[in-house]
Amino acid sequence: MSEGHGGISRRAFVAALAAAPFVACARKTDRPVAGGFVDDGGARGHRLRDRAAMPAIRRSERVPLVIVGGGMAGLSAAWRLKKRGFSDFVLLELEDHAGGNSRWGQSEASAYPWAAHYVPVPDANAVYVRELFEDLGVLRGGVWNERMLVSTPRERIHRWGRWHEGMEGALAETAADRDEMRRFGEEMAQMRATGAFTIPSALGARPSELDGVPMAAWLAGRGYRSAALRWYVDYACRDDYGARVEDTSAWAGVHYFASRPDDGESGTLTWPEGNGWIARRLLERVGGQVRTGAPVHRVEARGPGVRVLAGEVEYVADAVVWAAPSFLAPHVVEGAPPVRFTYSPWLTANLVLDRWPAESGFEPAWDNVIHGSPSLGYVIATHQTHAIRPAQTVWTYYWALAHLPPAEARALLLRRPWHEWKELILADLERAHPDIRACVSRIDIMRMGHAMPRPVPGFLADPVRRALADSPGPIYYAHSDVSGLALFEEAQYRGITAADRALSRLGRG
Ligand SMILES: Cc1cc2nc3c(=O)[nH]c(=O)nc-3n(C[C@H](O)[C@H](O)[C@H](O)COP(=O)(O)OP(=O)(O)OC[C@H]3O[C@@H](n4cnc5c(N)ncnc54)[C@H](O)[C@@H]3O)c2cc1C
Image (cartoon, rainbow, N blue to C red; front, side, top):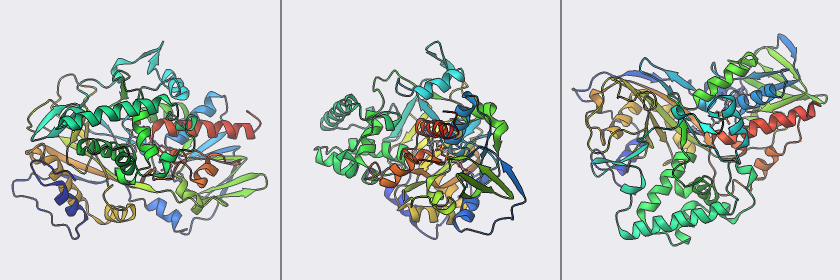
């Protein structure tokens, strides 16, 4: 396990994370920091799980198609239906705002994401992503909108007490590290050439023995010994899957590196509010059909169709696109298969800074990684919109609680009060910015217990996952967890293909 430089070690940090009770060590010189939790701790979801008493039905509506869940999958299904000239549907969203993991917020300084914050420039496989981006003006006449491509500097890493440009350069310490990193890059290029690692994944995915082993074991089996390479791959797994390299299927680990071109030129699309920008544009197009604050608590067969209950309203439909997380289906959907996917818990925080902290080394980048930290670092929300550093900024801090078993991490997420999380976040950032406490005026925290599906070994072959993907209807499963990979492209693909299949059922194929 690598050790942090400056501030506390990673081992001590993880121990502090798990320790209870936590001893907050605010110092006299600390300025007060405002903020709190912005989620409701999943209370509405827990009511569904616990089958809490629901209000009596007072109204019935006949709607041919109901979409459940207003994340990227549900909004993409709605976008598809509208594009195909079909408007006889409603989208029901549990929260008061749609967007799911692509929700966003706004402060005086900037808009900012709560979770998803970028989409790599899609290749030719991602037909629907390209179509959407043409619709939204991100892609015009084959040219990507300059203002939406991440501007330089794109990435930096803090190590040995200073910031370094890029990620890989500051990782390899020895010639052996460099050799292994090169060999790994070559092996990933060969994997890419097989055509099995695509985005969307369903186009290329086929049974693979890689899926049966953890990524860590696969690396060891291929003779990779470099601690630098292992840290890099572990970072990638925590970043995309919220899971350590030991807990991730080797198929998914390889997919991270082999699914996208490694030419360094393809670019990444981002916005101050992250993928919230896409959610906003989708809502402009389909918002009339979206009903928020409408948790669906029951979906059951009614003749050849379906009855959907949300609050006091009963919807009588011919088909349903279930774009809420699949693990909720057995609690809500009559006859749903027994979903036992693993989900990674995450915490994100938005920090308002009214001045920039001191630091040494390479200048601030869009993505800022702290070597040896259990977090994924932070993204600067103002990076894209300000050529000159603005006085105020917002940093979005990402932390997958990958070092504890998911159930324990979820319990900790709920148990630990805001001021303790705030202290842990500041202590982590202090490794790279010793005066961070003097710069931050506000920290808001989002707790996501079931933030994303975790592609554990065997996820690809999971018969329940495949049953959900191939559901004959009238309920079509569309959440990104049906792919097992939490990516915008997967959510969109699942939403669109479910919408198409539902339309076929309605005779509008
Ligand atoms: C911290 C974090 C960072 C991420 N960063 C990126 C990134 O940079 N790029 C990227 O491509 N992906 C990222 N992702 C992955 C992200 O999950 C996907 O991109 C995508 O947003 C998932 O969309 P979805 O619709 O499948 O699921 P969700 O976003 O989970 O949407 C499901 C929706 O269903 C609603 N719902 C739940 N139960 C009910 C009910 N009973 N009734 C009605 N509605 C219900 C929920 O409230 C939610 O709005 C990130 C994820 C996390 C957690």
